[in-house]
Amino acid sequence: MNTRLIRFLGLTLFLLAAPAFADPPSGKAGAIAQEGIQVPRPPFSEGIFPCTSCHDGKSMKLDTKRRELTGMHGDILLGHGPESRWCLDCHDARDRDKLHLVSGEKIPFTVSYRLCGQCHGDKLRDWRVGVHGKRTGSWNGPKEYLLCVHCHDPHSPRFKPMKPMPPPTRPGEIQARKGGAR
Image (tube, rainbow, N blue to C red; front, side, top):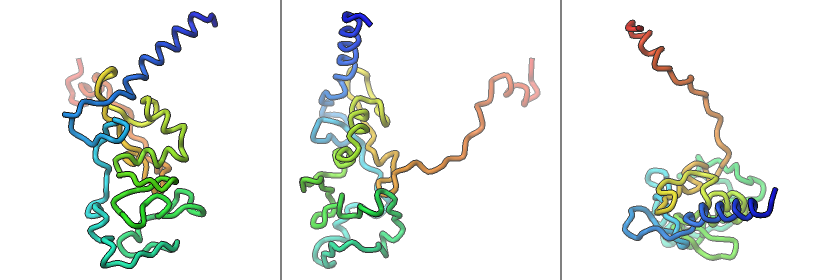
């Protein structure tokens, strides 16, 4: 490939990707994360958040030992590194309404992509530029990104098998079914 073409393609990719890092306008609905990335509210299970409604640090003893979950969280199947990971690797033990990075920095659930990106850096990079995940908005203006947890269960992230849907019906077939084929 000639050098001018490579430079042109590089510049084009840069210009197309640059808006992905721009700050969205502050008037748009949705949470704005620390990096200016706008995301909708995470899809919490009904009655689960805020976690401090149960884990207030007063009514329950803080137990940081790895153990089998029971009670309210007994239905969580940990299929995300089950031999080496457990709840408090991601959830903060003292402030249950926060997650924490490996460094110990507490982060809100709206920037959980930073937590996921610690291990899945290639996916985080692709997500930021709109190659992985779903991003809506203008190609050169404000955007809203879905968080990893909008598509992946953080406790067992592999996609579940899906039953394939039938192919779409062609317009001519619809008329034939109605008995009005021309």
